[in-house]
Image (cartoon, one colour):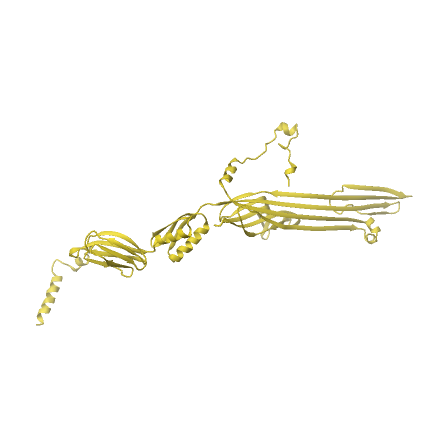
Length: 437
């Protein structure tokens, strides 16, 4: 009774090792899948899609049931429910157990639902959502950067870590009109008294005129004497008053969210030591400088970060090292962030500088005598006041701004040699002082 199974096993072994059929030949055989129709479908997660077949099905097999679920409603129709994000396929068998169709199923987030939510949140924007490679991709052009950021936040709540964006903001440009006004007032008084008293036996002289280096605009000389003694007295006086007003009127244009800068001035060489007996030169800027970043918000306000700076070279405070003069700068700077309506102005004032200096040159001892000391003393005092005001006006650029820019020209013309040499017309027209404010 035990021989039949054994003989059967031997017969199987002989059949597998029969002549003409080697084990290597079996190893190189390639199994080909059954020919079938292929198609692909997309099913939103947690939703159901219905499908129909071209022929009756006897069996439907889902490769990964944790991703998609198939429920047949008849032998030619079924619906698929997306259970989890991912990909799988469905095998549909026809009569006789033959593979009739292979359906590739991709379960992802629903782009239609997200697009409807974005349309409800931003009814004036055109935002479209596509399902690409398992993630949702937002495409379109919106009015500003703020819409893009909020749309990303909404999409991220709907599909965490599965959102891409190709949204672009329409190019809103901001024109920044800047007025930099600086008024400098100065008053100088300088009175110097010098005298020379001499005869055949002695000479007494004191005073060198004005304390400062300026030339006197008033001089009074007295000459007299008694006997062999002569007395020469000279009184020098100087009074200066002045008002200097400078005005810069730059207009800048920048894209919303981009940085723009302006400099009306120049650069000066600045020595920088690099080691023993080695000095390099760097160039540093001075003048009227402005940097700003505008952002146009949804409510029409302009979020403006502005940083104006006014500087000038100060020779009085320069430093000399190793036969090299290092210049100094007088700088006034402000940095602020504000929100303004279109066309409103921001005035930055209070940048006020006041200085007072005096100097006395006198004869030791005699200059301390009450009342009479004024005859043996020279005095100088000086007041300086400088006030700076910056007015900034941002507004959204319009087509009229670019039309005006195309038509803008510089007024004035160059005088001819005849006008310059014979008529003395260095200017094409007189300066209208009434327009200087």
